[in-house]
Amino acid sequence: MCPFAYQTSRWIREVREQTGLTIKWRFFSLEEVNRAEGKKHPWERDWSYGWSLMRIGARLRRVDPALLDDWYRVVGHELHDLGGKPHDPPVARRLLADIGAPDDVFDKALADPSTHDEVRADHQRVLDAGGFGVPTLFLGEQCLFGPVLVDPPVGGAALTLWTVVTGMAALPHVYELQRPKTAADAELIGRSLRPYVEGRDWVSINRGEVVDLSELTGLAAAEKKLPDTNPQDGV
Image (cartoon, rainbow, N blue to C red; front, side):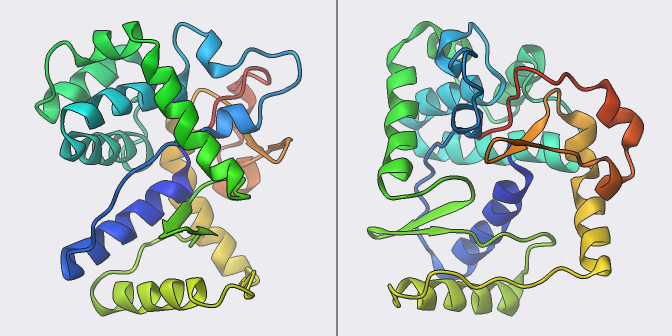
């Protein structure tokens, strides 16, 4: 459900297209990481926006990893490009049909408690490696946060970024490389986040703090309509 993880996924798909890279999608829950004390864990709810979509993904991965690949693609496109609501069960069912998933996968995923376990295991792997959010990449056993981007590069530029990322992974004592954001950068980021803000039904939280995206995106009215409890912001 994270817009930046989705943009990174678009970039890594482009790298795969050009290089034959093997991508193994895994799960991480910002909803759980950002859970307020006293609130339910996502696995304690009958339906939890990001967590339930990941449980469906876990079931799909057992059937065919290519179905999980398609699932992440269509869920991300629906939310982050179209401003839709893939976290609504009827929309999720439609998207499953669109990718040719088995008819019973939605119900079987939610009826099977082991899909909770599968998502939790992937989530814990990131935490055990010192990770804290998404996008997170594992290159072998090397864990990297990022790259965080909008307008994902394509063609040769995508491969240039891949060289940067793999080069950093090869240097274990390089911990951070960050570009300061200009006003023009903020405007670009705000435009890219508009569909996400229009489609979501939760507040965004970063390391325990609610993030107000209204000024960045120009969607102040939409921001005010969102609930200030039960934040769910995370695949």
